[in-house]
Image (cartoon, rainbow, N blue to C red; front, side, top):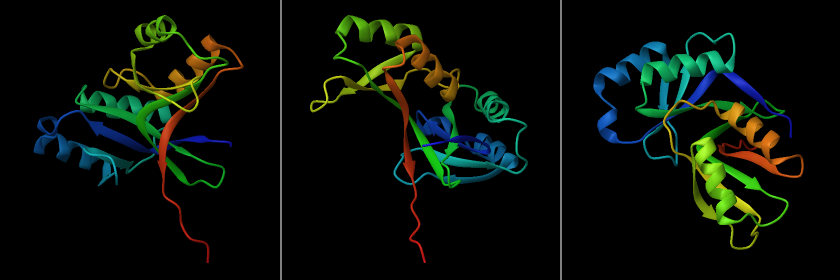
Length: 166
């Protein structure tokens, strides 16, 4: 599957409802359209009124605006330009079952925490980003792929909305 990174759509997931002040939400709305992300508590899709020069530049702008009160992720688009909304987790499939020590090392270096291990596929582990907005998800995915080697698969966990064909 070929994916591109949106220059205009982002996901913001707040850590706490207290962080969603009226002032901050108004500032977000001044950047464009803000809609709840279905199925993600305290999650919103932000569509910038004006696309950023790059996905990373738009992410930086929103991350600075939210100032650590929410995790921000660019929306991925598949080969049909359908949006795929990141929810702050990564799946990693290792060539063999990783040890607890190997997982701790990855977590410490990358600012991640293990959210679950797959009981049916022991070499697959789900990670969650610990830090708020200081990690650009596409860079993190690339970095993990490079560090773990070509036989390790890394992908963000995303939500998709499917439309029935006519």
